[in-house]
Amino acid sequence: MSFFNSGFFWFAEGLLACLAVIGLKLWAEDRKIPMPFWKWLIVAAWLLFVSISVTFVGTSLGEGETHAAFIGATSACVLTAISGVIVWRLLTVR
Image (cartoon, rainbow, N blue to C red):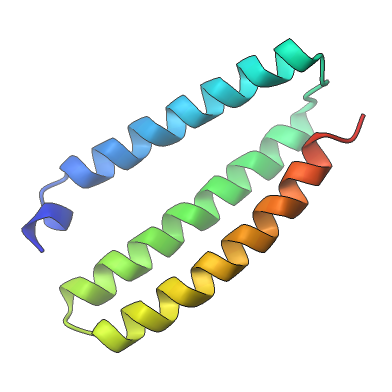
């Protein structure tokens, strides 16, 4: 569990989130999809939700609550997938 406490994990998560946002920007420009401010707010909210989900699971595992981590990870995966599809549909609306 020291991997989650070292700070490297959170640095890597932030780095990957930044790369995902840069990739989204380039993808939208390539497909000529307009990205107004409200769409970026939706993307930021979704990334915050994903980050909080990962944080919950990591914290639960660190505290020795494996059952809570399993339930949290399972429900977070389902909610993240459903909300990701909704966000994807909202982003591709022209």
